[in-house]
Length: 129
Image (cartoon, rainbow, N blue to C red; front, side, top):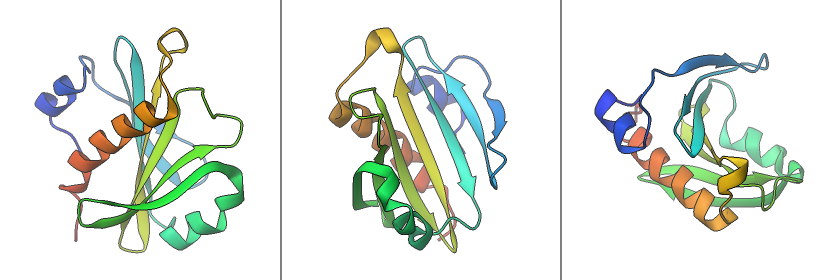
């Protein structure tokens, strides 16, 4: 999804690590000195799926990522914990960018979600239309 140069722009210097949540979402985990992010692919997790999960989120705002529909979300219990996800609709599924700052570098939900959106905007340009 991201070139080595793009990863460096986000502070990533090491290759990503594959992750599998065991619920149909596979992805890649990236770390920086002060934060980390994971890009997940949910082949069957459409925007409608996420809308059905709405009650699990304290922040749930439908938005646009480039020309794609999306959702900004912060899980209940994670408000103020510097962890935000930006979902991007792709066909009948989605791609999610989950971004978080390290515990000792916490930022506001607004700043954390802005960083998730920044990464998601780069990812969105590479997704099929």
